[in-house]
Image 1 (cartoon, one colour):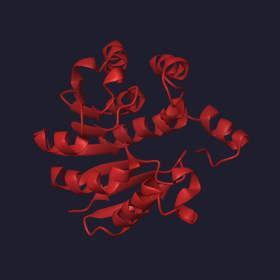
Image 2 (spheres, rainbow, N blue to C red):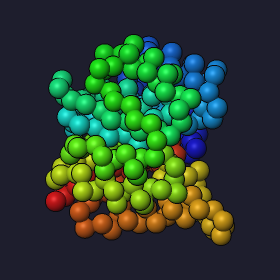
Image 3 (spheres, helix red, strand yellow):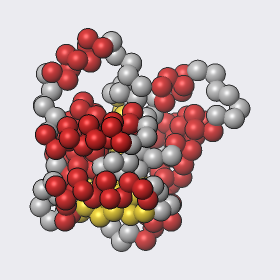
Length: 214
């Protein structure tokens, strides 16, 4: 997932804003107790998410894929005082883990957890979102794009994680590799959609920033 040399990556992290103490604690516990801890956003990407959110200053944030709550807390750092973050995950076993850290933060009462299928939940959330972060099952990325676009306005921003997919997007794709096929379709859609302007950044496993033009 990391394409940069380790020394360069270490230098970047040491010259970026320090990781908040609560997120350090969350990260440690994730690596100790939860399966697939590599899914965690981590220090650098977390600070990128925080910075982008602070620049956007969203009132309403949608996150598709909560995992242990690290990225949600990073995004919440830029949220308006009367804002609300809706985060969706299908893994019931992580609900209490997420809520523990949400409640330890300054944003606990502003973070709404949803459990279940995001494609069914999103249409039921009566909000227009200023910022969306997609970091869930890759095979559904194109479907997530289709379902969130009606809930976005001019200037809204979509952040998409894992769009380089460990480099698989530039390799020969196997017929049964549904995730890579979906990501190729998704990346193309972001780059050509008439409502969006997009830049793909080689941060960690690839992070796309897409802005709604109209």
